[in-house]
Length: 271
Ligand code: KIV
Image: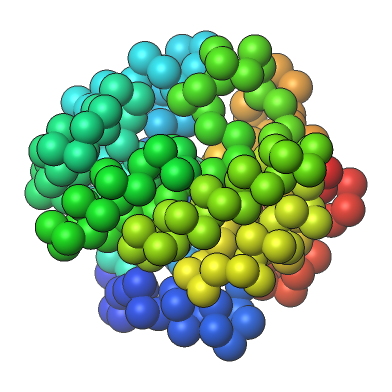
């Protein structure tokens, strides 16, 4: 068994902002357990999202909607116990941030019991008061715009967002409102690459893309998608890095290098 002893300088939000300013891409993956966390850190991942995608890939749900705060605490604590270096963002699951006060109670548990460095919530203009409340209580927040998986029932499936002018303008406005409210980072999911460019140039905080083209300040993938072990059809934006690289560690190192070099996502992974 490998133990995590080699990492000494933790990645901070300042580190990530500095990388963004000097044009160094941020390589992020989801993680949900201790062993993968150690391998991913040793392969150079800068940041983890302990995403509520765990409801689908770890727990077998059809969507992220049934995931509870207790579920998130369990998986986040797994990662926190093993993590030595990478920045850790933990999702506020569906229904746990309906009001600013509820969001603060939930977020404090993710930080105190789940070892979160930052919490992530889905939404835009409608979440401004919540983000302001969290930030004014010293909870770092990452916004999540574009496709919002917790609202999948409203969209009728996982569909690219912002394809028409009105939809694109609304997502851009969401990103700007969240920055104004104080988020320290943004995830942009499943939008056309040219919209992601507009978002990335119009906000100062790092923009992490998933299905949003190569221009974002960094990239994230669901770990099991990039290892090609997700059941069903892989989304267009995902790439199986394990197929060409022989081991999990080599696959993750290849992903990190491809992100840093701006070779992933390629055009065929973008909308
Ligand atoms: O739940 C998740 O995995 C996410 C992705 C954007 C990484 O939020």
